[in-house]
Length: 132
Image (cartoon, rainbow, N blue to C red):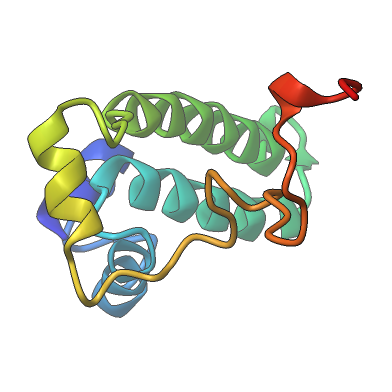
């Protein structure tokens, strides 16, 4: 939670923009990826500021739309950092890992197999196709 607060700049304990429970919710929903969780928290903060209007009174002006845009940009940056952390994997790279996977009694059987289109009622093979 502290890492998310640090990433989004919500470290002033006397003026926090989101509650601890909201941050924990985002962390839990994104598998512990604090960058993606922080990006979603930024989008929630941006939405809060987007509801408020810009105000000007004389020389004094409050620009909530600028805060909203800033948090949207920060969300984009954090999301891209969070996606970099995801490492793609591939199965069946080695014979031993393939054998381990295939002998796992708890694995779900694939919806297709190599011999799926083999017809047991035919007696001829493709190599004999067309031969009399």
